[in-house]
Image: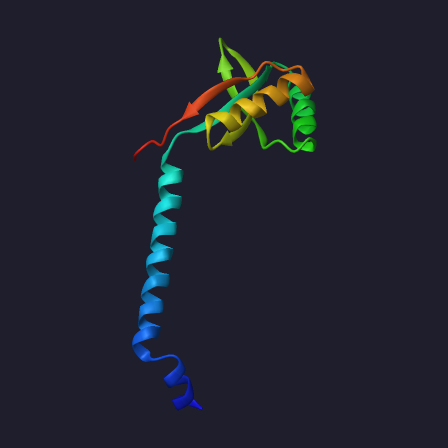
Amino acid sequence: MLLENEKKYPLERMREIEQIQGEEKEKQKEAEAAENKGPRYLLLAAVYRDEAAARKKLRELLDAGFDATIMTRDQAGTLVFEIRVGPYPDLAAANHAAAALRESFGLSPSISVLTETKP
């Protein structure tokens, strides 16, 4: 049986196939790495001073399928709650999501560019 397989699939051909598969995997890894290095886009969907209102809007966005989160920051001595949506891999996707937030939720989102920071 082994001899039959050796005739069908010579060792040299098997090595060629393994090399081709290895090169394809390497190209795929490089493409994924290049995709991850580019800028990403984040939407600032809304800013609230009331935490309960921010959490309510967050639930609405999450229920609608948006990847949203709340971030807090100090604004002139007052704690504010920012609802951020994303990130998106390209500007077109961010614009599409911003349009959906405007039309469906009456929000006025702004788009920020996220760039990779080196340690």
